[in-house]
Image 1 (cartoon, rainbow, N blue to C red):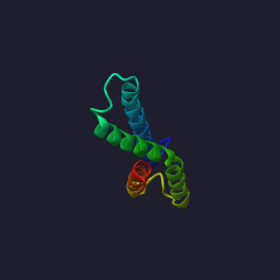
Image 2 (cartoon, helix red, strand yellow):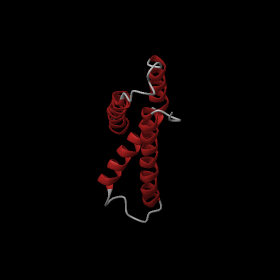
Image 3 (spheres, rainbow, N blue to C red):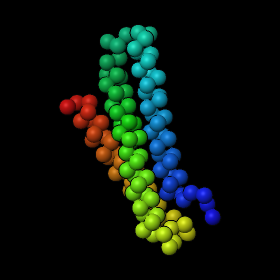
Length: 111
């Protein structure tokens, strides 16, 4: 038997991807904060990076929620959860989280 179910592995990868987005955008922000490049020339780029950074943070902070839901589904279907992949669980959680994170990041940035 696998140590972790495929759905949990997919969600772990999704959380790691959100963390990498945050690290990447933070690195670029450090370049702007160190005044290596003028922020006036890249003002549109900074807004886009802020949106992507907020998106990554919201995705990462939602990890607790979608891991909890995935573990609940594992408990609900415990009789055959390890034999059936049920990829719809992880795909629907990632799609819902991406939709929520996009809306929330937009509201954080432009409201």
